[in-house]
Amino acid sequence: MSISIQIAKIKEQLPEKAKLIAVSKTHPTSKVLEAYETGQRAFGENRVQELNEKYEHLPKDILWHQIGHLQKNKVKYIAPFVHLIHTVDSENLLSVINKEGGKNNRIINCLVQIHIAEEEAKFGFSYAEAEKFFNSFHEQDYPYVQICGLMGMATNTNDTDKVRNEFKRLNKFFQKLKSTKFEANSNFTEISMGMSFDYKIAVEEGSTMVRIGSSIFGTR
Ligand SMILES: *Cc1c(COP(=O)(O)O)cnc(C)c1O
Image 1 (cartoon, helix red, strand yellow):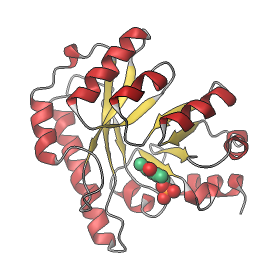
Image 2 (cartoon, protein in one colour; image 1 turned 90 degrees about the vertical axis):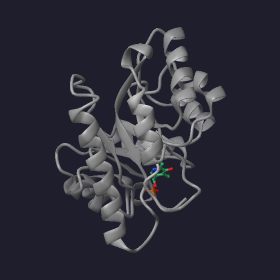
Image 3 (cartoon, protein in one colour; image 1 turned 180 degrees about the horizontal axis):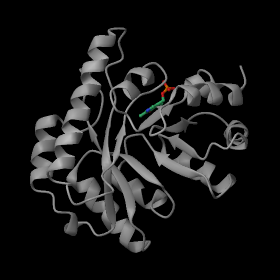
Image 4 (tube, helix red, strand yellow; image 1 turned 180 degrees about the vertical axis):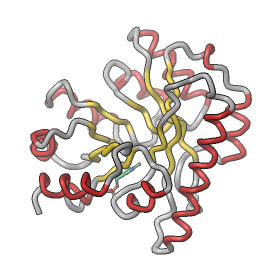
């Protein structure tokens, strides 16, 4: 099935407030352009080098999302242009992003990644760590960072109740932060959750950004 048909089909199923991030990792720029031609502008990559190469070769009005684990020493390569970093998983990383934002004289949008799945290999703060982090977090310490919300990846399982509960809990934590820590911040709006296999559940549970790769571009 063609990329444009797949994008149209997915968009049909998304509520208005849920944005589609087309995850183009491992796929060539020709495929990104095919999606671009349908009007798609938000693309996600998980490797910094690939993100840079695609940024160089593709139209400059694309909004690039870093969705993979980000090493501190690589932040400088994406700081000049990245639209949103979904994967802030330590205070140190946030400090480096702030510093690189300053060097580039731009505010870098970030999501804090929460480890919501059972699997051990996934990155992100545990809820307990996130509570601690946000308790001591002061926005004024990071003038070149905008925290726009949270990101999480559910367990890769056929147990849809389990997936739903993981998304529910992330939304609940988001709402709590929104009504306390970020009460005065109108930019704290995003919950990035949902991939090809679970995005329908994610939007039912309040996702505002779905990150979809294989359902658009085919298997990797
Ligand atoms: C690859 C990836 C996706 C997209 O996964 P698909 O199953 O291809 O839709 C979403 N989020 C992250 C963090 C990814 O690394």
